[in-house]
Image 1 (cartoon, rainbow, N blue to C red):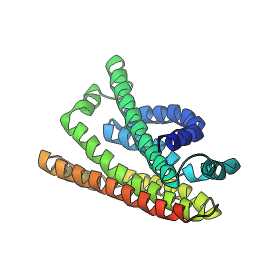
Image 2 (cartoon, rainbow, N blue to C red):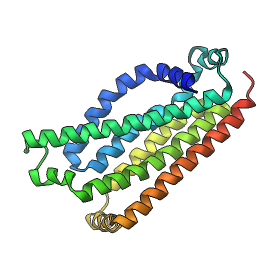
Image 3 (tube, one colour):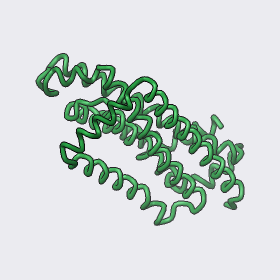
Length: 238
């Protein structure tokens, strides 16, 4: 499993080296504009987890990499387990990117308060409510991303890199952007109602319950997806 994980990381190394600085700059810009750590966490997860994870199947088909990997001393269960360990690595990288971006935003606000808006708004990024909201939104968005990535992984293992499976990741990205634009265009009264509802969820008991549900569903979906992919892959003839 570890060897398969290393091979996956080698395969996406160049993409990650290009993606990380872009993700960090985007998170910095969003943090300064939105003044919200929840927005930064969601953007960092999206740029590293689904943006790269949904394309892992395409990398398998490049230059016969999928067939070459099967000639190595790796079982098919090791390959599938290594793939999902790679997805977990992308989640960790996204969270670390978000933490670095939030820290840099706070540092920029401390040095140049006018750059990121009023100092009071920037200080709100460090409040308990802001941290709780970032935790809740981050776990909820992680659940959504996991559904997208796991669905694409199953499709790639079942059908390979076809025209349809190549287009689906872009459609998923487009759907997320449309939702973000829709939320951004909502009336102020709707946004206020959403904010009140979020504050209601931020009590310690409700927050723990919601976070626990999101985390449990994420693990369950990933485990079920891994089992399905293993079943498909063991029956695949190359």
